Image (tube, rainbow, N blue to C red; front, side, top):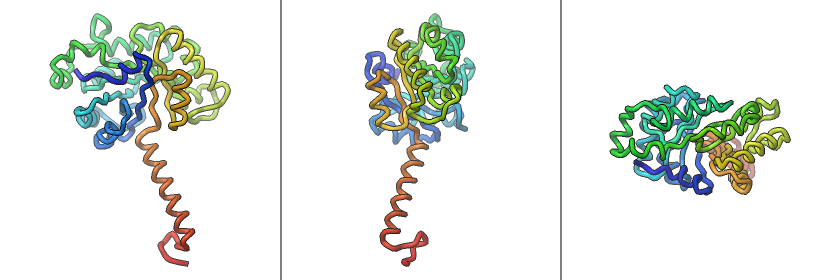
Length: 265
């Protein structure tokens, strides 16, 4: 079975950097898998990406070492089962609020006796003859903390056996705190909540992550002790790059005396 290099890194205290793929495009996945990042995560909570799209994304990076995670729409075991049986090496479960929800998600990702995942992963078993022998150890379970209720219960959530990563969703957390949204949120209430989760992670020996918006933030989060961080997303980076390019073109044409319609003035 394919080794989950991201899970291996964080288990050894080494930061692991990836990115979000909101487009669900196989070419984007294939391109990103050759950029030096450790993993990619397909966005299936806030997108139209379906299982048919996922199969092609998995195939696009099969020849690389890069594991593919999937953010599912919720902790429903039926949702998680189908994503894993399609070939995901990691599952990101949104909005975990308590230990019961955490256990439900973890059980859905692990074969008995460690969990309650059903037998019958047709595609992974076809690709890897030893899938059943190593799935429990290679599949990474990432539980998202996105609500102040979860922050207040973070110790009991981290005490559930089988948690691989606790991952902070900064914008949803900000919304529940009733503070302004944004990556690298510096509102005192937000900073305090993030520090509470990070302290709990260090106390319980659970790798902790947070979504970052820039390389500078990733560097600072690593210094703080975070280990699993996506930087931006394919759509965000594309949008930013094109906006920057268009702005530069406009500035250059203005300096050379050319109107936006290409005529000299």
